[in-house]
Length: 115
Image 1 (cartoon, rainbow, N blue to C red):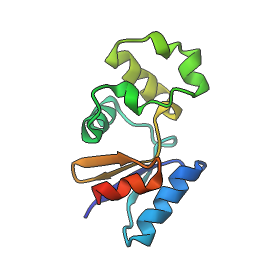
Image 2 (cartoon, one colour):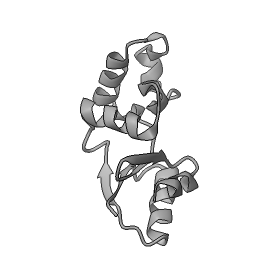
Image 3 (spheres, rainbow, N blue to C red):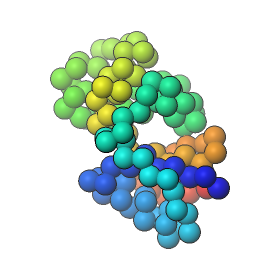
């Protein structure tokens, strides 16, 4: 099993999700996406793995950057993806990927569905 967590160690839900994985004997690869921003391709792949029909569903819409960039009125998937590449704080967290499936750890137990 090859599990990856897109992780922000400052986020309590992200820390809880990592602990849940470890308590289930899963040692995931940890990607601190604020230090290592995701590419367009990685974001597009995650959207597909999550089963989302829009990249917006992967966005943290309450972030200051979301409001500052006026993304509420943006309809271009490319522009929304660009915003997440340039502002990784906009990406919902944590995301756990196992093979071709992904889940967002809100609540942390959600990720158990992909193990």
